[in-house]
Amino acid sequence: MPPIDCEDQELLDGFLAETTELLEKLDDDLIALEKASDDTDLMNRIFRSIHTIKGASSFLGFDLLVKVAHKTEDVLNRLRKGELAVNPELMDVILEATDLVKLLVSDIKAGEIQERETEGTINKLLPFLTDTAGASPAAAAVPPPPSEPVSGPGDAASAPVTPLAAEPAAVPDSSSAPSPAAPSVPATKPAAEAAPKKAPAPPKPTDGKGDDLSDNTTVRVDVKRLDDLMNQVGELVLERNRMIQINQDLQQSDVNRTDFNEEFGKLTKRMSFVTSELQMQVLKMRMIPVEKVFKKFPRIVRSMSRDLGKEVELLIVGEETELDRSVVDEIGDPLIHLIRNAMDHGLETPEERLAAGKSRGGTLVLAAVHEGNQIIISIKDDGRGIDTERVGRKAIEKGLITEEQFAAMGQREVFDLLFLPGFSTKEKTTDLSGRGVGMDVVKTNIKKLNGLIEIKSTKELGSEFILRLPLTLAIIQSLLVEVEGEIYSIPLSSVLETIRVDQRKFHLIGGQEVLKLRDIVLPLIRLQKVFNVQPRSEENDFCYVVVVGAAEKRMGLVVTRLVGQQEVAIKSLGNYLANIPGIAGSTILGDGRVALIIDPVAMSEVCE
Image (spheres, one colour):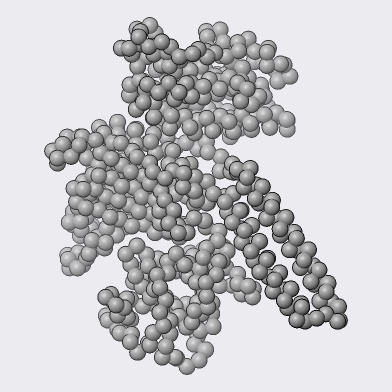
């Protein structure tokens, strides 16, 4: 592609931004249309999306993109007029065409226009443009919706490219000009499209999971949030000026210490309040709806349902729930693994469900909800559930556990076997995953987010995978504790309670220190020994135990004293120290000292 000047680059960026947004919504709309084919508003919205993409790309001069969008638009036009009936076969072709549009837009975005073969996809669309194509039985009785500009045989798909300096009116057909909402784009014709050649076979449909059009370098922000942020910055400026004034007063020899202390105390409180508000506003600006991840799953579920011959209804709850973009960017892959496992191994075929006394179609529920300073995401199916006996036997066959170990295991311990690398109950390897395949990847990715994963399952009734994730990876509420003079930070989300106990009540069972706490036996971990901290004084009979939990696990961290609760900013330890067991990161305390942030989940695994 020839070099683009700054002005043209802005126009191109505008085109890509709007096209990306339209394509992101298009998958959801097409899946919804398959279930609500009589929704006229939905149909018109889908048509307008493709129409806008075609018109804007025509003005740009991307001929391949125009050709695919043009034929897709023509098919959609027949659908909205009632000349075609919505059916799975037709939707397969439209979704394949949409995938190809995404691919072509990705090429433009990357600045590397490739020679793509489009005829295969276009030829699949052509049969639906003939007079003999299947029409809706009620087509003759249903009047067509209000007409909109529709591309004709002589439209911009075959028209010469309009120079950037020309007026929009110079485009031969109004249907090919960008709509008022569509940004104007430079008409530089890519060299690869100027002389198309025969290329390899068209790309295989990605079923939505290969969509890389989402722009992670930008975040849309509500104007009100920007106004709130500006107001807090103004308050911060006022407090800065007050701090400068107090500092100048302090330089005077006759300063009244009592007045100074009082004013400085007031300033400290105001600075703390303004900083907290400013922090909250910035965090809100980084928050985006989890819908950004969830929106790809209807397409994946539809594709897998057809591949597996299953009838599955996906219900999405709480897609408006917000969390930090850094978390959103990381949870996509784990959720895809869990969705695929539920579809392939959890949910039965219609025949199997009917034989078990269930409805033909299965239900898969993907839900998100806020709970304190965490977000809870669950993937629940009403399938066959997890057969713990079969899981245990497979683990024994693979030499992962012994018969004696399996006999002593509870349900949770058996479920934990699913997260072992390479473990699977599937007899044959396929393109799809069974319970266990890829589950170690899920657990690893969730741990990177300082999150937890929990499994609930009842045989023949279904399974639920529950992810507990922090709202943000930047700042956390923590409990500061002292271990022989060293300060450590424990994420407050993992702390269940703190107790002061007499160490003489500790017991030794099988080499493990434990404490009887009400109705449970609590395993203890001495942080002093874990981190090899040298004692500063004679051992005291009394100490503090911080009870932490990870899913159903409970353990006690033995510390010297409790310092207090504090909000801390998480700092990376760098690549060299990144993989220290039991450590999630570090933070800087008010006195300038560095404190390590403990990872309770990893700590329990280190000490097992």
